[in-house]
Image (tube, rainbow, N blue to C red; front, side, top):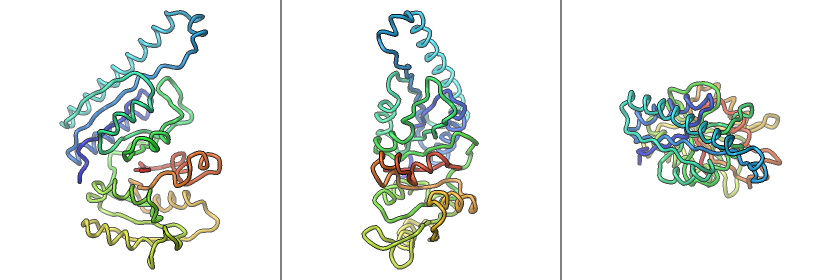
Length: 278
C-alpha cells in the first residue's frame, strides 16, 4: 500500500500556494502522481437579481474566474515541473463540494485547506473542509491556513480512542507512518467498553504498527480541566509533531456543531497538517 495518486485543491486564496507546495513535496516523497484541481464556483445570484444587474456583470464574474484559474494553473504547472513529478491539471465549473467529491474518489489522498474565517471571496465555501471529509470516502490532509509545511510526516501523532473512525484514519495513514521517524499513539482519558484501549492504552495499536515495521510509542494522559482537543494540540506542539492523524466526527455533525467536539475544535485551531478520515 502506497500513496500513488494525490489530489490537491487549488484556489486563489493566500494559503493555496503553501498547500500546493505541501502536495508537491508529498508527491516527491511517495513517487505519486499529482492532480491539481481548481473549481470555478459562481456566487449564486437569484434570477430576479440577474435581470437587474445585467449580463455584463455576469460576464465579468466569469472572466474573473477564468483568469484566476489560469493564474493558478501556471503556478501549479511550474512547481510540478520543477519538482519533476508526474502531474495533471483540472479545472471545472460548479459546486466546490460536489466536484471535489467526484475527483477525490479516484485518488489515495486529497490535500485540502483549513477554512480561514477571515478570508472570503469567490473561491470560499463555508462547507470546507468538514462537508468534504464526511462525504468523499477518502482521507483528507487538511493544511492550516497559516504557515508553510515543507515537511509532513517525519514526526506523527495518532489520536487513538479505539473507535472505527480512528481505526480507519490509522489505516489510511499507513503509507505516511511507514516513512515517519517518530510515531506517537496518544490516548486521552482512556476507558473501557466496546471502544476501550486494553490493559495499556494504545499498546495494541503500537504492536499492530510494529508488524508493519513502524516504530510507534503508546502514550496516554488523563485530564479533567482541559479540553481533549486542546490537550492533543498541546502534546503535539511539545513533541514537535508535523502531522496529526485522527478519525473525524464521532457524533452526528450537527451535534458537534451545536455542542462542540474534538473534530470541530481541531478544524478551527489546528497548528499542523491533520489527516482525517470518516
